[in-house]
Length: 220
Ligand code: SAM
Image (tube, rainbow, N blue to C red; front, side, top):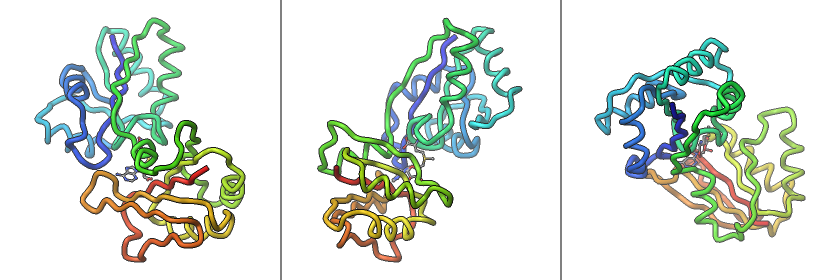
């Protein structure tokens, strides 16, 4: 019984690793976020495996089912729709639960793409140390998030949804110093990949480009 945590591409399917493919081909069951998304990826690589959806708030019955399958000696892989499981995605609660119930369980990472590390890697900012902040809160606590960001002494990276990206840019400009350097990565590894670089006072994203997926990196 082995539980594999398998990173998926963040757009470009060629970024899947040989080990990830080998693992997905070898396991008895794949736990994923959206079975339609993972089924599409598996079909691209001609892999046929049983899929079960798993969310951070999945019922205890689902979690207990995973535990029982592992106890029977089955190998299971956990994937998310994109990137590395657990990074602003489900996974950690399940892993914590399984460690508690099956202390001998072998948990194996199959590392690979992650939007945050991809964005950091092209930022050109010092990234010997950085903080990852997930998504800014939607409403309550959102202003506080940006005010605290202004005081952050390390390079910071966070995700933002396209619906809130314009608001995010306005709030960054409102709360952070004008000369703070920023890199915004859009649609990494995909056809419309764009990297916007600037400082808080001059960074802009054309209105018609505020769509797709975004990662924001702020220099320390
Ligand atoms: N687990 C994923 C990872 O390892 O990067 C992140 C999952 S989180 C739910 C999804 C967010 O990641 C998106 O809203 C976006 O902010 C960022 N993201 C994912 N793929 C991206 C891409 N190709 N380009 C830019 N940002 C991306």
